[in-house]
Amino acid sequence: MIVLGIETSCDETAAAVVAGGVPGPGRILSNVVASQTAEHAPFGGVVPEIAARAHASLVDGVTRQALSDAGVGLDRLSGIAVTAGPGLIGGVVVGLLFAKGLALASGLPLLPVNHLAAHALTVRLTDGVAFPYLLLLISGGHCQLIIVSGPSEYERLGTTIDDAAGEAFDKTAKLLGLGYPGGPRVETAARSGDPFRFSLPRPLLDSPGLDFSFSGLKTAVRRAAELAAPLSDPGVRDLAAAFQLAVTDILVNRTRRAMAAVRGRLGPTPAFVVAGGVAANQALRTALVEAASLEGFSFLAPPPSLCTDNGAMVAWAGLELFAAGQGLGADEQLKVSPRARWPLDMRFAGVPGAKA
Amino acid sequence: MIPSTLAIDSAFGALSVAVASARGTMSRIRADGRAAEDLGPMVRDILAEAGLHGHRPERVAVTLGPGGFTSLRAGLALAKGLAMGWGVPLLGFTTLFALAADARREATENKPIAAAIDAKRGEVFVAIFGPDLGVLVAPLVTPVQDLAVALRARVAIESIQTIAGTGAGMVVEALRPFGLTAQVCAPGEAGLALPLVNLAAKADPAAFPANAVYLRPADARPMAPTQ
Image (cartoon, rainbow over all chains, first blue to last red; front, side):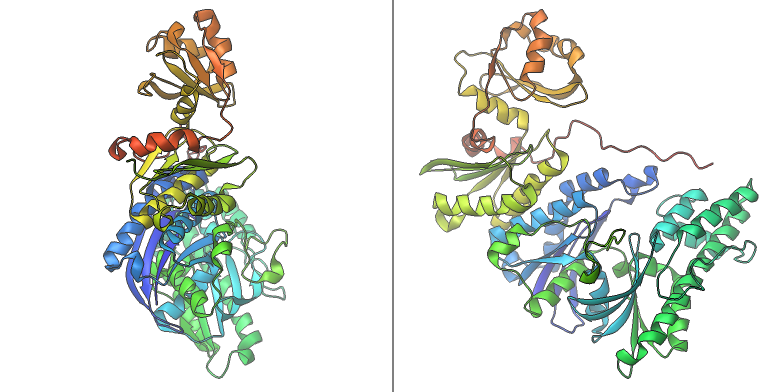
């Protein structure tokens, strides 16, 4: 199977062509990402209307490039996968309608993909990991622990009750004047900082359950910065290091607790997978590798370039749906709605506050 | 013989599609449709009804705005996908051009046609076209009270014969003191795809690239300097 994947749900206009079959690994024939980081940088975060405008002007060129890099025409494809949500609705509309046009004109099946599922399934594209596995999904919009049992089967064990992990990085970077995007900026600053000079809280750490909370940590960073004002450059680095360590502690604590809770359900060689943009953070990755090892889990994470948003993960998720016979009929696929919210675990559909 | 052409408009509330071919011209409109869900099925249905060879036109035309940001992008993105999928040219036209094209059917004299859209916040999107639909005043957005100043330098206001669009009343009111005698043209009931489709069939694709026309910056403020 060869599938084209299109991604426009946040600030990357991306398209890719992927070949293979389940359970993977698959082959990435092309992977084109047009990042809009520079357009959003002056605003310190993603501006939805700026993102939607960029997607509308770039989506066809990026897709053409992906097909050309892969050396395949539309006639070689099995289907067209596209992110139909969750995400910034203006961008999702652009990608979805563009893909509907391509599918209608070419007669190919349209495969609407959940953006979170695409992140969740990327390790099957890269490593062919068998279901089920434990997933920590950490990105700009999400922070969740999930058992992944099939391309459309997800059991959410815990989620953030306020900010997403990536959101906490962005807000901290903004607060410390480190700029945007916050994740890499905080990571760089933290590398030469002393994580123990400032003492920051670990919200929810002593509470039962598997949920996360980051907003109290963000407030504590602000208070520490105010108390130490004016903050010198080394001070900024120390505070960034303290923040990153606190986030790491929270994620490791919840992950180990989840591993202990579900180990028996994941077979003799349980696998732990981390995905999403925040998984590109090396310090965090190192800590999670150690946690997995201590709990007897194998550790898998896509390479950083496939942790941030991309079209290859969307193509692969579409390929999984197609292989599982979960495609839509010709009438149904033209009517698919873009969704700002779309929980992986449908038990949480319509729950207030649950972004996904 | 003209190339068979599909036209799509979703820039305002209504959705419309039209097909022109050697067999004639047809159009469909949905006043209450949702662009993301309904535009695709409308295109599929009209292509089937039009009986084109392989259900496939030889070019695609789309409105570019000004209009609702998200809804105009829905039509533009669908049109881009269709044109790439069929491997045919895509032509883009402003909604003001489509309004003028629509008004031209009622024009009796060889005089300019104005198109105006109520842009809210006391502003209007406006453009003026010659009787051949050549651009006399390119699309712009202006506060209503500044309209006369914006237009007078570029066109003789008394020469305008017809005004079309939701902003026509605002323009008449603002320009009457400056000698405007133009008639307001009621919009055609078929939507904007129909007046475009035959024009698009004959136009040079290179002269009508499909880039969205917003006429307003994205609603965003630079981040405040960090304290």
